[in-house]
Length: 67
Image (tube, rainbow, N blue to C red; front, top):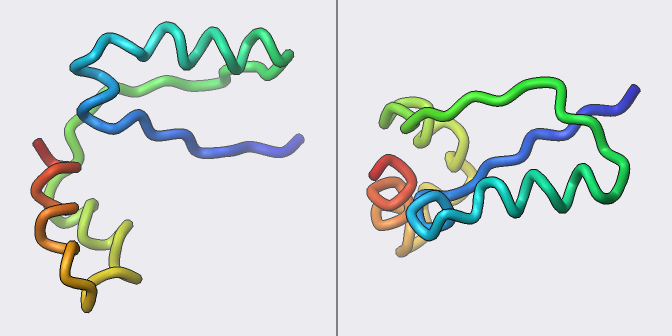
């Protein structure tokens, strides 16, 4: 079985798109095996986006994703 991580960013949550996004996966026959809603701590966001830490948008990205 193959698994994929899916993250819905803060603006998608604020716009109420979570159910629609999950529905699209289910319509395609994919099975949801877990769901967690959280605001990632700064350390997790920095580790996840570490590849971009030298880019000019990095600090804004971290601020957005942890909002």
